[in-house]
Amino acid sequence: MTALIELPLWAAWLVVALALCGGLLALTGSIGLVVLKRFYERVHAPTLGATLGMTLIVLASMVFWSLSEGRFALRDLLIGVFLTVTTPVTLILLARAAAYRDRIEGDAQVPPE
Image 1 (tube, rainbow, N blue to C red):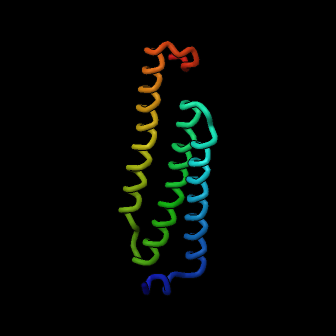
Image 2 (cartoon, rainbow, N blue to C red):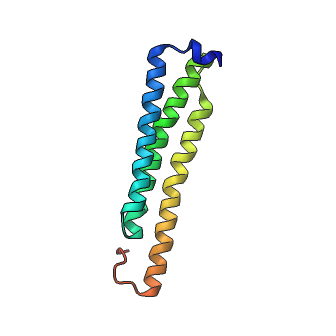
Image 3 (spheres, helix red, strand yellow):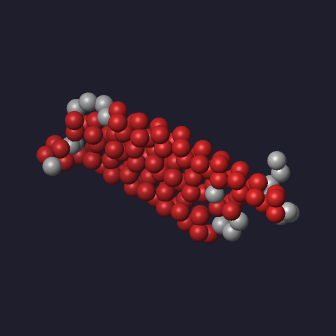
């Protein structure tokens, strides 16, 4: 708990701003999931919101732990890299599976190959 007291005011504001903006981006992606109608439209909003929001939240965490520990917080960077790689890959696999299923069923609104 002493790290919170020793954190400079500018750093605390930076951490709060990054975390808040990241949370708002993730919320925007979640709202897009609810509002958009078709699967192919809905799959993009949460992926982009989650990736961009996660980036800002990881940056906030890196700033906080780097300043409070006095050394670069590499573990947070690794978390960000793994999430950045896995989220778009999951999007691609879901979209391809849905497109394959829709082509087999003969849906006329399937995106072209």
